[in-house]
Image (cartoon, rainbow, N blue to C red; front, side, top):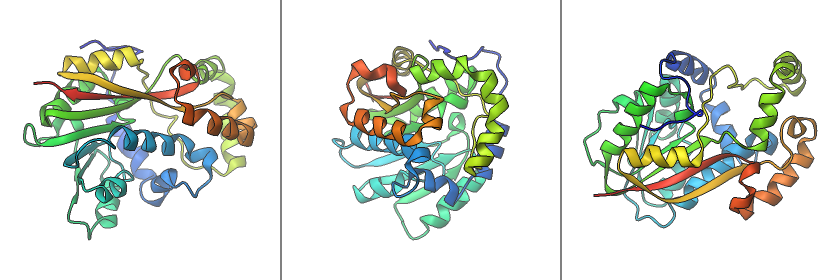
Length: 277
């Protein structure tokens, strides 16, 4: 499979144990709040935009059986349940799934499972849609290859796969790399001043270009059908932290445009692929 960092070295160690520890620590209402449009949009913006882009890409699909891999506490479930989908969520973090099961205990069309994407063990051709939001960035090469094959295996022919990833060539990504050292030194102070407790920076986040993601999908038999750039940040790091209101206003202006010529401002992208016969 063609990968890129774009992916990390093939022999990179698995960080799944650390992923479980980090996400279990922030399970429950803390994670749900990131998708709440009524919350502080400075922190929530990218999560809300990712959710909206997935909903848009699936809007034209006939409701069926959907699998959300790396589902967390199930923030995608309410919308798709309302649209008539049967929702299945899979996540490696037990506390995330425990919370999701409690949250949707009275919803017969919502089911949640603890497990690794690369070992999903669902029947072949079982789902009409498979989505993976912010999942691939935490996998090493071996896990990534297995996860892509497994997602394609459980997806029916003609079904839709949607994957979101961090893209490597955004202005924000370039600025973060250039300021990595001072950021590490000043971040504890910033976190304390802002009263922030949720932080994923202790994990390795791999980055993938649109072209790389398209090749990865093609390798497992899914043909690219559509795409979307999201979390457009005209005011990149660190200005988004220093001038959050101005940065949010600029992102509000840029996000609805979704023009490819603004891809340099988008920190992330997603592809919609369809499984060919």
